[in-house]
Amino acid sequence: MALSFYDEYQAEVIESGLEIVVEGEGSGEVATDAGNLIYKTIQHVFQKVGEQLPALRIRCHNQIPHGRGMGSSGAAVAGGVMLASGLLSQKRSFSEQELLEFATDIEGHPDNVAPALFGGLTIAWKDESGPHHKKLIAHRGISPLVFVPPHQMSTKLARSLQPESVPHTDAVFNLSRSALLVAALTQSPELLFAATEDRLHQNYRASAMPETSALVAELRAAGHPAVVSGAGPSVLVLEPSPQDRLSAIAIAKENFPHWKALTLAVDYKGASVELQFGSGN
Image 1: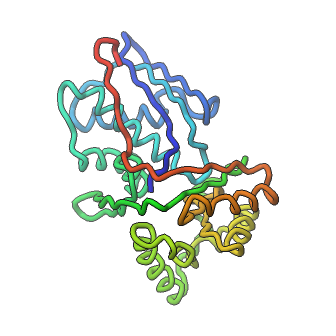
Image 2: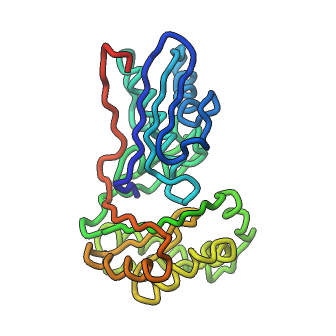
């Protein structure tokens, strides 16, 4: 599900070379050469359509924290795809399916890039013909709240803590909650607490994220629909109404004062590109 928290990227055609400037999150950490994820995504799109990539100046104004389970890499890939579409706009346009395919090629799966590209709540999957998505409209009452810790968590490490097999009863439990979650997010927000119950990944990763696990437990004990955000260590709370967020913030502030609370909305639009012809952008 896309949330109202954004990175902004700019691409400008220059005479020669490659210039990348990163401001905000990731400054001094992410690559500023040809290994930069946004540049690699732009390069991939140009290669896929047989176009020559021009020399570029790329500016990144980042808000999304890195390594926190908030989809920063998916946002960067979606941003790279949109920059490429803008740079190529005078030659051709791309369908939603093409944009999703470009992004999935780089990200490896469509789960994060689909909502980043198209907004709203998306169900994404892959088959022999490639990636697909179905966009759903989240209930207007859904009020997301994200608690962001000062420390990062490796997605690779988090995934490595998953067992090769799980009990049959746990698999059935999560399948039912997955179906219920779609209903809760689109029609019945009052079911969000039950719909966010989990037996397949949070407990296995708890030892690597003790503060995350403790905060989720405290919030759920108080009746808040809290879950680990992505691979963690951020915590996502899917409240059924805006006022429900206040008590959740109070709990986190008392016990984890160094965590940052983000009161967000569901973004229904998705990624957009603004063209500035004549200036090289």
